[in-house]
Length: 585
Image 1 (cartoon, rainbow, N blue to C red):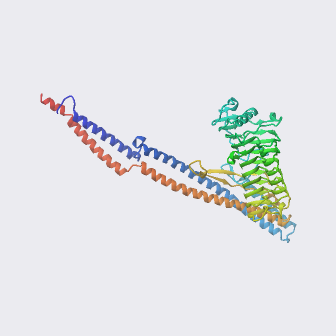
Image 2 (cartoon, helix red, strand yellow):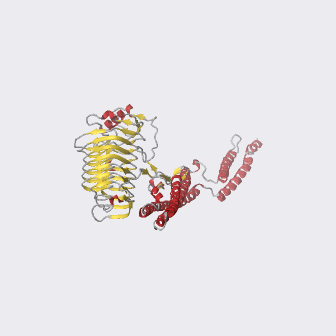
Image 3 (cartoon, rainbow, N blue to C red):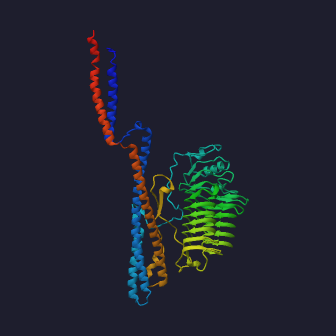
């Protein structure tokens, strides 16, 4: 049909011309960007997948940079340690030379001057080796009242104050600030009535509990029936003057009775007296289900209980904590915990009891990277570190022990990579038979009791993965202590055996750190290889999903260009149809 009002042929051609033009524009975009998917509408599913891949690729690039920086840090530390090791080797040679007995005072003075110069240089390397402002070798002395790890203070100004919450409100989530003794007592009341089912609680100020020293004193936060189920962050503040005085036959006594997770809490000048109670400590009686952790906390004062008593807690999993409390009880009494596991912690407590008494723990599964200068006494299974223990690694023992059954543990224990004072020469590593002991060394014996200065190691976390899992982070410790280096200033004038023993001990410590740095370097090289493989595979997969095949796109471009030209020609012809109709009139 030939019409005037409607030119169907022209409309059809226009529609196809529009399609070919759009397809032509798409082909041009793909060729100019190199992507076949430029926005979600091109392919919604694959766009989302490729975007996620791009995020991971960027994360792997950062992780690779982190690992490379980590290697630079380790190389810096390793280079300085090599120089320190060379200096110590020379000191040993000088000590051996001076021991020959063929040198007069002038010769010995010359040897001593060189030795002093080497000691000065070792000290300089030890104290000045750093990377980007981070001290690498020197372990910092702990202040008398401070935390082992630096506390990153959380801003509490925008949080709800616990004083503003009704007592009958059940809390299962959210963040709340506590800045007064009254608010802390309110937390105890709400917890013990089952109102605290979760949530995060932060100290916003130091708290003095002197107002709770009448009668039985403080009511612990959490019971076996109603444990504290939230997370408590001391935020670097201190709770002082805790007072508990009860003769009841009970369990779980302390600032907290039964807790969930506790971080960054200091409790000073505490008095906890519960001679008929089990699971007693200054900070807490026990962890909820003995599954949650107490980290970066400390305590001081006096604590008395019956069974499972510790300066920090009765039954806990502890890391990066310390206690300076006087601890007394009957069974399973420890300077830090009565029963549990402890790592990266120390104790200077006075500990006494009947059986299973230790400077760190009474009984437990394992202790790692700890030291104690506690005074420990008891009747059965008395150890410098633990009364009863399965496994111990990387510990120092400089405790004074009465009725000592074992330098480290009062009963059979697996002991490795540890040190003790020669004050205990002739004593067993652990009580009982069938000991499993490897790499245990003796400290210099010229002084019966010389406590290690309160140092904490220099540790930093390298983020070498792309998520928050433990597998994405490597904790590196580059530091070591050289607290007896100054003894080497009198080479030639002090018993040569003492000098040689001190040098050998320092060399052993330095070589051990160099070995661990080598292990860290191998791990980081492995990480870099892993990142490279994952990075390349992700790039390949993203390319398959998103990159344009330029040969295919250019062919499509030419095809659509031809169709566009043909449509333009046909459109001109179709537009002549109404004129043909007019010729029939």
